[in-house]
Image (cartoon, rainbow over all chains, first blue to last red):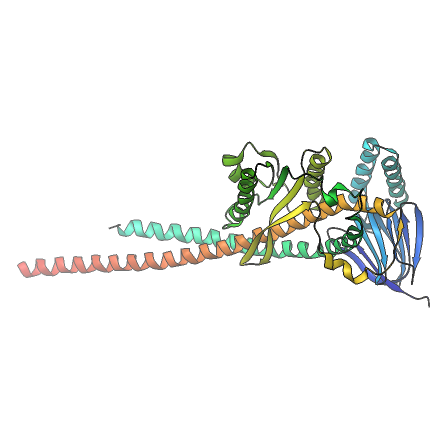
Length: 128
Length: 292
């Protein structure tokens, strides 16, 4: 069995998950990366996207929008500005998220913001 | 001396008031529990954020091109005071206490020749400040329509602050809110938002670890500081929400108890006057009989 490490996903409103996991796929600003146990300490800004973790009870994915990840000696902590369990994100909630994402595309200024907005839309489309 | 009917009416009216205050106390207790939960679940995020910032900030505070959010604009002329209060009254000295420390600071700043700007969050603070300092108030954000404080509202406040700061209008930003300690104790607090203040000690535990940064450290810090501002405002607003309910709960508890005392006193008075009247009637009958 692969080695596990401590993983926490927190949004400003609450702690979404705190568990021991085998690996986490993080949507980093400069590209996706997978974190395994004993990863070197690093800090990365996130882009909107899917976060996939492989834990004790299989794979689970979360939608995160903005924030950053902090891989430290005590484990991986994701501080997401907005985060939701993909399983919960459907119907009205998903629709609302899509609307705000497409608004973001229209109002975004600058290349980075435009790219983020487009990625957010693409990611949300993929969930459905 | 009030007549028996007047007394009966008064007792009934005080009883009705007592029922209302009792209900308000129970509603506040329920809301307090929810507000406290919200404040607690927001804590991990705020703590992590502070830890990371303290780590990065310590290194960059002394660097020349550090973000103005961290070291300020180098000036100390224009102060923006964000005064966060409740949307409703009937919560004891809650709003007044926050406004009081804000007013002290306003007076001090004016005396030393600084320029003051006030941003009111919540309408009660605005009501109390507009009489004396209406010229200084630059904005008011209301959250009356919200059932519970959420991050989006904190973002709105933070956006208003960053807009002012980025345009160079203000140099120092301070937040006034009430720290929740217990149901009977809420401490009005001043928190400096810009230049950022944080505990140096928070960074101590993993200061020795060398981190990889993606993208660079400075970009991360640049991204983090405005976010930290929002987080701090959010925390303040949540603390405020819990404090407000706590203050209202104890105020209403007092009111209920006072109403109880009042009912006791009035009932005593009522019984005494009733007794006096019976005695008086008896005397009249007896003396009438004796006269025959």
